[in-house]
Amino acid sequence: MHACILSIGDELVLGQTVDTNSAHLSRRLAEYGISTLYHQTVADDRPAIAKAIDRACRDAPLVIISGGLGPTDDDLTRFALADAIGMATDHPDRTVELQLDQPSIDQMQSRYKSLGRPMPKRNTVQAMKPLGATMIENTCGTAPGLRATIHDALVFITPGVPREMFTMYDRDIEPVIRELLLDHEPRVIRTSKINTFGTGESNVAEMLGDLMARHRNPTVGTTVAKGYVSVRVRSESNDLEHAQQELEKTIALVEAKLGSIVFSHNDVSLQAATLDILQAQQKTIATAESCTGGLLGKMLTDVPGSSAAYLGGWVTYTNDMKTAELAVNPELIKTHGAVSEPVALAMADAARTRTNAHFALAITGIAGPDGGTEDKPVGTVYIALAQHQQPTTAKRHQFIGDRETIRDRAAKTALNTLRFQLLPPHNSPA
Image (tube, rainbow, N blue to C red; front, side, top):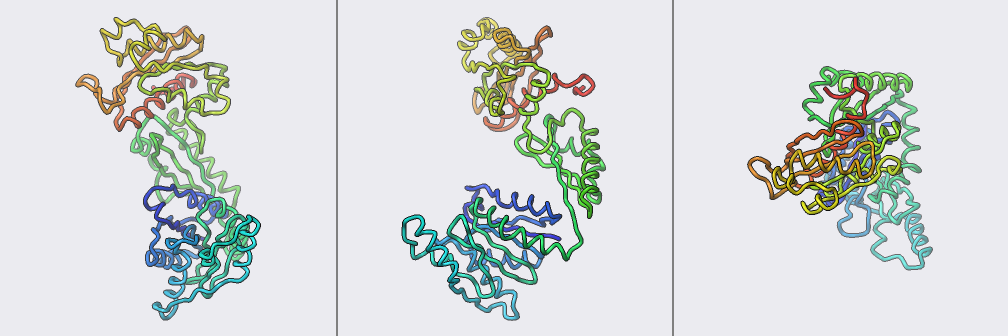
């Protein structure tokens, strides 16, 4: 069984608000083996919404729509639903009227009364429904949902407010879906995400080889976000146990092919994965940062319980601070420059010895947009790793992007440098 998901609103189309509803709905539908054919975001434009509803109802037997049920002039979903119902008749130009649903208006008035204020007159439109549609009670907001059938497809419309949409889905939509599936062959979908860092998407795809063939089940695909390349595995079967077994087999194959660049599964961040290893090994880390301005420390302290492994750090943005706080020799800076391997090494050594940590990471670089030279262009970053009773090492990196991207990649690369060092020798990169 397939579904289409529509999200309505100018704020979504313009990128002012991130659409989290569609992702939530897709995950919930997948629990019942329902594949989402597509997500579509539509502006507050009545003809465009009506056309999107009509198309979705031709494409899938289940359509879920969120947004556009408010009382203002740009809330047009109920009117577009009426248009779509008309388009599905033998007379596509037919106008489908809206009618007042008295139970809904009574519930809305009761809700406003409980809040101690009268219901604005314009909210009456929220109790209007197209002929042939039914209302869905909203227990945590003022806008009821709508249910209709178009082209034999079941259509649900919910408010765009996530809490209201989630509640309506749980109480009124999911039970109907369960009942619908009684007449269909059972289908189970199980998914997992394998996160990597340190190489590009094309390299990951090449390493995966025929695992990414589109005809195979489970399917394997890649996505990129904020420097991470994630491998998404999707297993479908008529049997839950078989779907899970095949998912786990493919995950094992993916991990075998990708090796140490895999740092976690699903929503576990790089910093959380690195801290897990540190804590398991009862090791500690300190930091010394220049161009990242404390971003590395922030990433580490974003993880609850990070104080068990992260001791603290320094943000030595200027040359004077590098000397005053970390005793970096001014002659070293004068000879090699603040962005150099010797200075990165000195920063890391000082951070480790002054905290007595097992490890210390240091970052110094040019994040831009200014400050680059021919020898050291914008994006040049040195990352050093100091460790107890081992030589301190540093590596030059050349990152591409704007200031924010360069700083982000530098901090993540530093974390990954530490993670590689913590891995068993046979798992470390060559």
